[in-house]
Length: 133
Image (cartoon, rainbow, N blue to C red):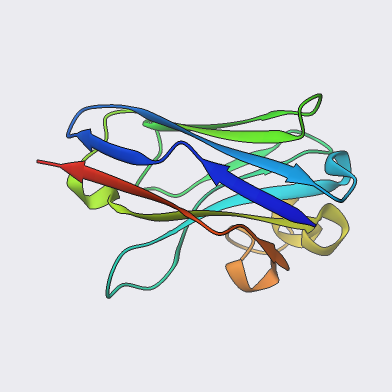
């Protein structure tokens, strides 16, 4: 499994960025892909998640209405469109992958909350997003 993030950078508050997560080495359609972020001195935070088998999505409250996750199954790529960025969004952003079969309790609502980061077995190297005020 290989995940490669791209699209990070420096942007002013109110601006936009689109992150990409290019996946290879596994059956993309059978997996859920999550975006996580970690700011210096802070714990890792789940940002968004998409289930490729059924297209269901999840967003953290802090990004709802501003971020949009999407999946291009033909390109084996997941995108995170980030609008109305603010300095609190500054972090290293990681994408992660795990088979839907391992995450279905959270993706179907049988378990409360989003799939936790600890349940994802494959991670990318991360891409830095810096939002200046």
